[in-house]
Length: 228
Image 1 (tube, helix red, strand yellow):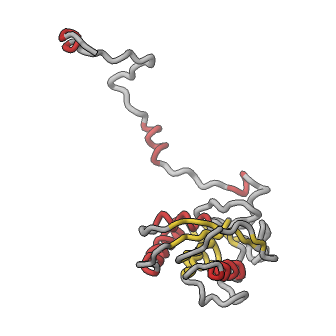
Image 2 (cartoon, rainbow, N blue to C red):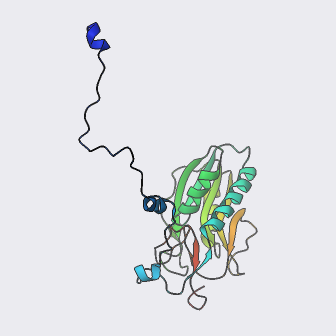
Image 3 (tube, rainbow, N blue to C red):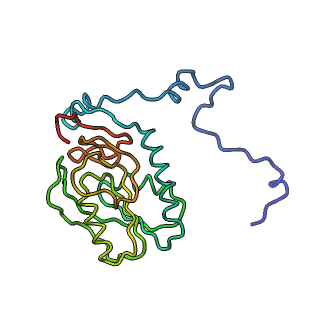
């Protein structure tokens, strides 16, 4: 396309905006700036969701404490898995989703991600018969098996054994929380846990209460006299 010299030399004007221009002296009001920097007040979930929040629950680990524990766990796992080839982070759904995402953001070596589904809870506050769900079509190499909590250990052990039986060269187990009691299986085969929690029913950070609140970034516990 050819243009004349006069057309090239003439200044190009920007299209007129349909919106009024703010005066040159305009600035954001101080109240607006305050809203951007002030943290929101804590949510009273027992009032907002009376039928979806367990009464009397208390926060036992803050989001800051959980994040710091995950930082330390990721560093330990990085050292433990250094030099491994063909690592797959195997997420034990649904509880393992939250800690797996948080760990994945912190690990700085290449790995694949897959998931399995097996549960004994199905929304209840106590374990029952193990039910198998989704299982990967191919299992090989080193598996980093991630779950939310080691309570009595039956589900985690069953998944670990099946991964080894199906062809995994090695299974490294990592849980977010280790519940403090002496019931269930020995714990000496668990490779890493980020935090310890009391012998109460806990939820948040992947763990649920009646199917809810897995998304919380802090950890809460039901009253001691309700359920352990």
